[in-house]
Length: 203
Length: 203
Image (cartoon, rainbow over all chains, first blue to last red):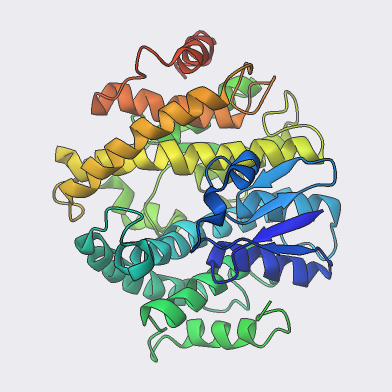
């Protein structure tokens, strides 16, 4: 089994943190997007969309999509559970995980793609989209701050894949977009301190 | 258990088709977005983001996010499996499901939101985003046509949640956006005929 990785990508990072939380040791193959390695015939044969990360199993089966990779690793290594325990718990973790994707991670990536120098020749950048999305992200941080009232982690008492995805969104916001959690949002800042202190946070 | 439904929404439709494929009978409560019913205090207490669909369990637990609702229903009613059978199969269904969301359904919804009259006062519409996304969708239809070579359904031999999501994307394209599968894309047209002929297609 090996993981095709794009080190600075928030999607790749969430898989690496997930693997670290599970205590797994999976060989990593970096893919250099800047030199177009992800558009090589060899890589496109593994993932025709040219996206990272990608998990290749020993029989050659290729699993793309970060969340699908994490879920496969959970299925094969149930402990510690990062997708919930019983049916209702799993549903709520999944709900929160998707909220963190749609309300935070995808918006952060959208801002990056539509403002970043490296994307200039790769997509049609729409500065207005980045502006509107930046404003939306501010609102979502306030919402999440309220939702965290009385909770240790995004989905409740346990650290889950929803926290991992939110963490990676905020890492991207801070490192690449100048978006930081506003000082007054105490619950969100406390949560951020809590997840950033985990030994896996820099995976 | 009851389902809060927004009849024309592609996200609500995928849950209704999923329920029909499982042969379940779940009472439906329509939510009228046009009159702002989804922004009422009562509804926001169930889903603070004001989105539909939403599954409310008998104990009051509310599960938002269509894919999380479908996965919960799968967990409680494993037959027929719509999320795959063994670990690798589940991973590949999940991968295809997410591809259908990110490459087709979300783009179709983006085009609708950024061009539709009903969204004019609800979001900042960016016509250029709709144009670029429409062009991308054309490319994705060609890609999917290739991927369907020799396959009955999106993820392989079985009809799965990935087909349901793709179906709902194309229903929206056809009904609301004037986007149709081009004639020359035979695999995609054959797949469309196959899924549209299922008794659950109009759920």
